[in-house]
Amino acid sequence: MSQVSTYDADFESYANMNAGAADCEPIQGGSIKKGSYCMLKGNPCKVTETAISKPGKHGSAKISVTGVDIFLGKKHEEIFSTSENVWVPIVTKTEYEVADISDENYVSYINKDGELKEAKLPSDSELYKELSDCWFDNNEDAQVYFTMINACGQSKFIACRIKGT
Image 1: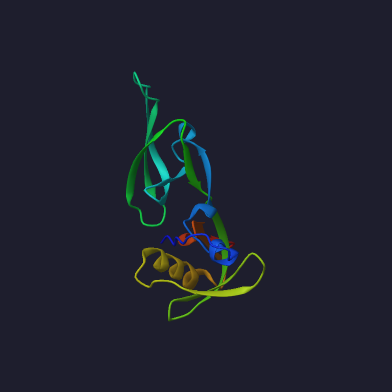
Image 2: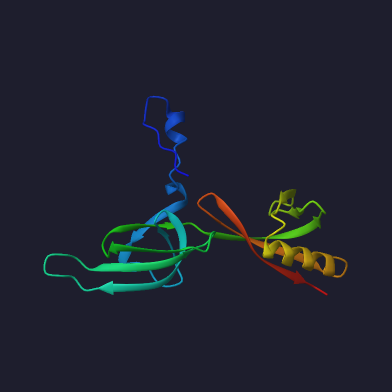
């Protein structure tokens, strides 16, 4: 969601504006490649297809970019000038060690600073089922890890893995 406010003398109100740009960096449209990330229609997407058209009589070359939203899985398409600045989300993947999973769908995990954290995961998701199956089948013999993808202030659980056995 975008929050937009006008700048006034109070720096705090200006600093609290959030349009997602702080989590992005600009690149030239012509350097977008398949497999990279790009903001399409305001959504962080993984690029699945690009097509560059030649410049016309009075215009510059264009690039058509198709991608899939990394959080919702929805397909988006947008056309940019190859010389235009395009926003690219800063995407990070972080792996956490699972400490426990409760019956109420709470996952206790150890973050990168070694602190114990807790998060509630939706019980109807396929990935939660995969994580809980990994945990309950292997927590005695192995360590269970899960991976989160983060971009533009959003996070999503994307995978789990087992180490040792």
